[in-house]
Image (tube, rainbow, N blue to C red; front, side):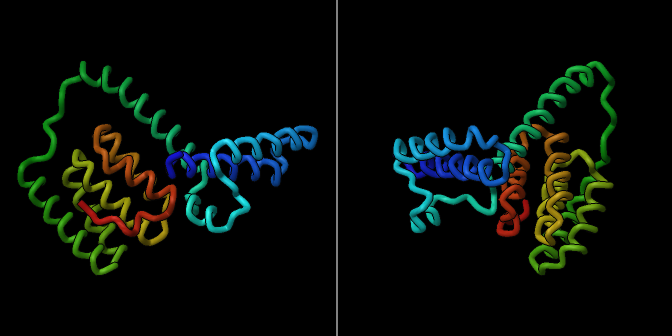
Length: 193
């Protein structure tokens, strides 16, 4: 059994225990769920009562529900973007930012990155705002602003920016990473692009 599989099983068991504790599951069904939890734990060698194993396998502060919510929201967003991309293909393309605007946007991004290193998150957000206003076609600027928002604890704004980066470029992998990090509130440790 791999540790990743055990982490998933541990998260499932935590989720099921939470549904028992918070009353999501009817009292009549709780006993059956408790038996299922015990069987799942035994089948995968996971014992949530073992403190050492719990520490090793826990994905906190994320929960299975929060990870699943991010996944479904991202999947819906990508699906709607794919559908709108098909209709947008028929529309004439806009000119986009000029080379001068792109150069100024890149300078603003570099300034923001330096401000992030100095932990001046509000100033970094303003710099990334400038970069985005000059070149809204670059997903890196949204992704970096997501990092700044998350670093100052505004995780909702960070999710919005990570999703905006995906709207600009659904193949921009770092935005998916940012969404995952935001869901577990650990984005602070990741560097800007």
